[in-house]
Length: 583
Image (cartoon, rainbow, N blue to C red; front, top):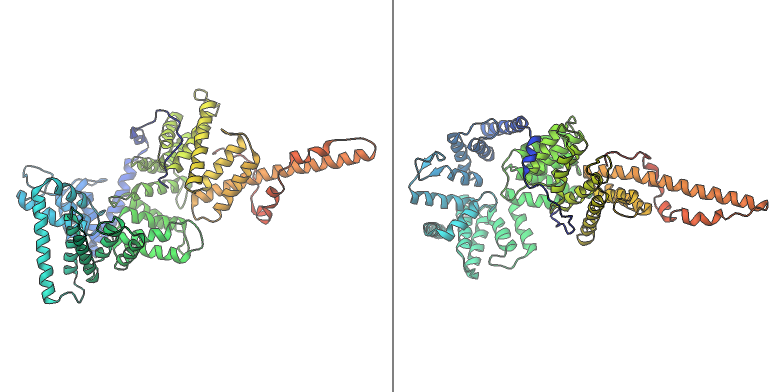
């Protein structure tokens, strides 16, 4: 899904209260999914003392997720286990269980205010220096540094302690071989130098870069990551340089930095085009390695791989379901959206019966849960289930509210489709109280205009959008009926669908094939009819009867190229003139 902005709006009040979604959420199902994730984490914790599993268990006990009661003591213990292994997110959450007010029951441990600040500064720097999106450490440091002199002083103290350690290491010549503790000091020192470099002095930034490079040399992947992300991506102390960003991300990934591995894997994998199996395999390796920190975004990406079965990765719906369910109930990166995407994919699997029994109630739960996280594409799928009476709460007015909300989304894929569905509803006399051809036309036009904006300005075309454009031109929805245009859009949808792994796109590709075959068949009948009339006219002329039927042949036939350009492939298209009631 892209972040393209909608340019053509039909103004109408729309739902901004997502409480309407609660009727579709199934608490027992949510509890079961969390219990499954908890069981996996307990097993990994017991067998391997896995840091991320320990962190996730701490988070479950901290927030009382599923059937688990809040237990701050257990949360503290699991966070501490993970933090001892330098898990960056656990470091941050462990600090949240320390306080200075003993009467506050949200804390487990208590320290004097000065000691608490010192502890938090140390932990937040250790967390944020690994990556800004593992936790809120980076943000908290930035905001408190602005307003708290005590935090400023403690950060400067930490910098001076690290400088002293570095000086001692230089004297002992400890930089010749891998030393993870010293590497950690160098990396944190580089981070603090950038944090304190308020004036943006070039010499300070270069010192920070030097410290990061030494950290990477001594075995800390965050050193390369910080040069790539903080410096060349954001331009702190250097000119922004996308090539250098990639170079340092690759260096960090070689040293198994989970975040760098995730981003590089996405770069290898993001294209839906077929034929690049080597890149797909590389993406799978990187995702699997990144899952040492099993955040929701990484788990979602692995689940998606097994749904689609790209390259040499065989399609495995059972494994996909496991990854997606775990993603839907796991903590994510601060900038991640793996949880709602995983829920959306789970909903689609249950809606279409991919490796599971079709269950519209489970599908609606997943879509509603994703929508509550403001993932607008799930509103379209949920609204469709309601509109077509696939779920118990089948109220067309609820469907309208959901579609309307999605139509106002800045994610144009969902906005285009929801406008199309709204047009269909207002154009349907079956809904006597809603029937409004003018309103229907306005929604069809908005759908078409936003599609044209997406395809012309952003050069993005999807099978789903092309298919629905074909429907609009075939049926005259908001536009003049034009069968040739419909044929063109159906044909383009078929062509694109044959080069994609996307299950949804392939689904619409099959629907486009049927529509295309129907129209080509009908056009062939029209052409044959003209030829017969011409032959009859010639026969009549031979017995002295004049006829003008032959003059209509050009007007009633389609352009020659629109028939012959489809050649052999047309034989593989299933002919089905039945109009799908689900459109």
